[in-house]
Amino acid sequence: MKQTATQSIYTVNFHLVKNCNLRCKFCYAHFHNVRRKDLLSLEMLYSIIKKLKEAGCIKLNFAGGEPFLQPHLGELIQYAHSLKLKTSIVTNGTLLDKKWLDSYGVFLDWIAISCDSAKEDVQKELGRGKGEQVKQTFQAFELIKNFNETHDHQIRTKLNSVITKLNWQEDMSQFVLNSGIERWKIFQVLLINGENDVFYPSLAITREQFLSFVERHRHLQEKNIILAPEDNDAMTESYVMVDPQGRFFQNTDNVYKLSGSILDTGVEEALEQVGFSEEKFLSRGGFYDY
Image (cartoon, rainbow, N blue to C red):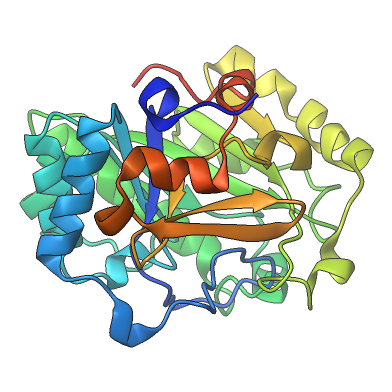
């Protein structure tokens, strides 16, 4: 059942940039149809954030590409916070540093670091770095931990992992425990034609293989780590996503459908153009303790 924006726009993933400093083979966010000359100004980005807030958005999640390649990321976080939005970032963690956290960390509620394996060789084969991603993931979580210990503010932490043919048999339990996270989002690798279809056949796994990975780690819930697994069906039409040109986009039948510009069309009409299932959003646990 598809709903209108005013009824269901709780969380929005705003993909600020298409560029990234890593080359993950499974990446679904290359945005090949986004032209550099059409990227939005800071004022336009502010306007979209305000419109999302007015439409009922509660939490704004900044993603990419790699969001730290957007030079105004900190200012956007601060602006969203000033509107009383809950703020979040999904990042590969390689560009996070103490200076940025000291400047903007107090405006941030969540950080998710993307890391798919506890094995550097697997990460390298996936295209996530050149053999240093596991180390850099721990360094990023350590930076956040140190920030939390020295500031009157608590940034909550998540781990995002994509499960593929290269890692579905792995046991990441100790890695997850050592990261000190609160929540672990576990994704079955998803085909998006025009984005990752070249590499997808070599990475695809069955739903049963994905679920076996999840069950192998179910015991982590006894350690107060929340598992949030999403198979391919759960990810379809269950996210409200905005591309770097300020358009909603939606995964429908493994292809992205694009709306008109939010700035020109408005939030409600633009979201109706691509569709969104509030029911699926809620069933995958999208509305949790913000």
